[in-house]
Image: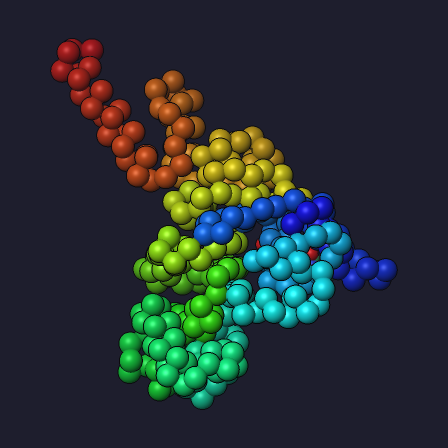
Length: 284
Ligand SMILES: Nc1ncnc2c1ncn2[C@@H]1O[C@H](COP(=O)(O)OP(=O)(O)OP(=O)(O)O)[C@@H](O)[C@H]1O
C-alpha cells in the first residue's frame, strides 16, 4: 500500500477517516500481525487488502493493482478472508457442500472439488462423520472450523484473518493457530492476522504492524515492537506476559534481558534460579 487513505461515508454526517496515509508492504510467505486498539482501522485494512473496500492511494496485492474494479474482481481467487465469527456465513445443507461451494464456483472438476474439500476438512480436524451433517448441527467450535475450511478449500495465496479464534477454547484456538502457521511455513501462504492476543503475536508473527487512529505508528519484528513499552502504553496496548515479566524483574534490578515469548521467559527464569542457587551455595 502506498499513501493509502480511506474515508467511510464521505460527505455525510457519519463521515469517518478510518485509514490515513498507510504505507505497508507484506512479503510473500510472511506472517504479519496487525494490532491496535478498537476502532484503529484493522478490519478496514484487511478488507482493503481483500479488495472489498477502496480508497485513495495505491494498493497492489499478488501483483494486481487494485484500483481497477476488474483487478479487484480477480482477487477472490487468490485471497481468503476469514471474518470475525465466520460461521455466520454457513448456509448450505451439509458441511461438505458448504466447503465445496467456493471450489465449485471456480469451475473445478468434481474430483478436484472433492480432493480440496476433504483436504480442507482434514486440515481443520473435522472428522468424516460430520461432513454430511447440516452445519447447524455442529458445535460452535466445529462450525468455526467448517467456516475456515470453506476458505482453505479455495487454496488462497493470501490468508486474511480477522480475530479468527475469538470465543474458542484454548485447545481449539491453539490447533487453528498452528494450522495457519503451518500453511505459512510449509505452503508459503502469506498470512495477515488481526488479533488482540499479544501472546500469539509474540509467538508466531514475523513482523507486527501497529495501528492507532487509522495510522501505522509502529512496525517491526515482535521483539522490536514490544520493546517500545511507553509508546504501546500510550496507545493502550498490552505487552505479552514475558515482556511484562522482564520489565518487572528489571525494575527490581535483576539482570534480565528483554524477552517476548514464554520459551524465552522460561529460559531466563531458569538462569536466574541457577544463579540464585549458586550464590546461596556460596553463602551469599
Ligand atoms: N461501515 C462503516 N461505516 C462508517 N464507519 C465505519 C464503518 N466500519 C468501520 N467504521 C469506523 O472506522 C473506524 C475503524 O473501524 P475498524 O472496524 O476498521 O477498526 P478495528 O481496529 O478493526 O476495530 P475492532 O478492534 O473493534 O474490530 C472506526 O472508527 C469505525 O467506527
